[in-house]
Length: 364
Image 1: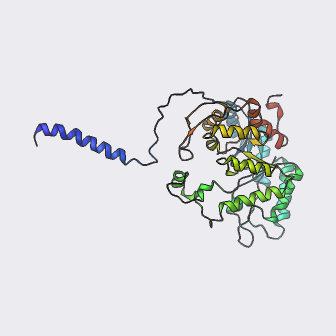
Image 2: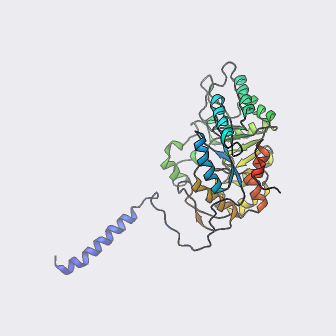
Image 3: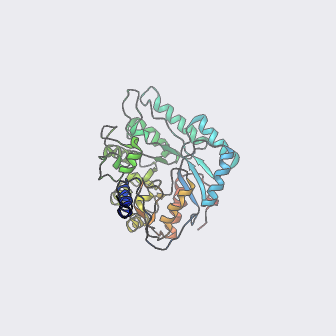
């Protein structure tokens, strides 16, 4: 082959290799930078101080709290609610640490281990321990998604969320005037076929253990209905439905449930991406139910909070979420009114959770 032909074929082959490599790019790797130019209003700290009602700190020492408070101050976070308090001696250790260092910046929720329900004296012991935990300083009860998904009773059967053997626990929380923050099930897409129509396909591919079926351990609808029946059975107890009860992507249905269950409040932790893609619809929902929506984040990643602030506070358009596998779509701001922001950020939490320091928040 002569030199003239080589000069032609080398660039041609290079272009072919480039095109083949580009075509072989998978969905996980494709993450284009938007060329859209629109106004940007970054929000690094919230407009009003907030209570994070959905946080998890597996260990708490005086040193940990000092660092946490520094990061909290940068975000304008007034109070952190640690939902992973445990019970008994472990919970007392958390509370003692808080009292000795930052008694007004942290509160702890107690937990109940629901395995073994049905064994002799289980209910009475669980209620007595919960009451002791609340009296020692726990400000509420956090129920993990293991109830309904993984907890088994003394006969090896799945413990349903509305199991009547748990009624005394919910009733005790109502009697003591503390809320129950409960996470039931997971997004419905985890139960749907993992195919090209599944919006959570990438998340399931990267986190395969999250995939569920109607027999692992029960249909999604059944788990959610168990939760709603339990709420309705205990109208004197205030419940905070974590992750907006997995209906942040269907606010019409969630609105129906809010009307049916007046003692059900909702937290926005880990579902802000659903709200940020429907700004007009979500804004209307927040205004309508402004007295029953609470701010929460879930994982303690300070760099992720500004996305929450920007969605709630601004009218920015088409900006990215921070986890592609949660949301490959763009976000839009809700531009909520100040009074609604105040309720979501702190007023509703002060109303539901007893004993929070109101001096950390503005007086109206």
